[in-house]
Image (cartoon, rainbow, N blue to C red; front, top):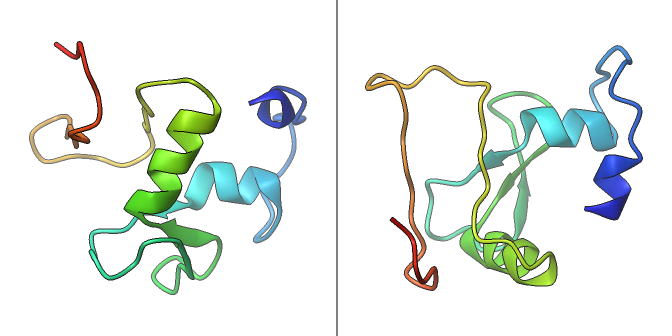
Length: 88
């Protein structure tokens, strides 16, 4: 998270680099993807799998990732990991 806090957010988003990845990387719906895979749907950034999600949460001592750049049919979507305790 230290690296993310230091990123200049007031830049044009290119098709590569940390700002691109923070904005356009997506969780994979494919259970066969456990790490990283190029995001061919967007043409930039990556899909990330469950193992990378768990690793990021654990390394940063957080319980939740909130994403907010895609419209969801029901207004929001919640994907829970069974490893999360004390979650409403």
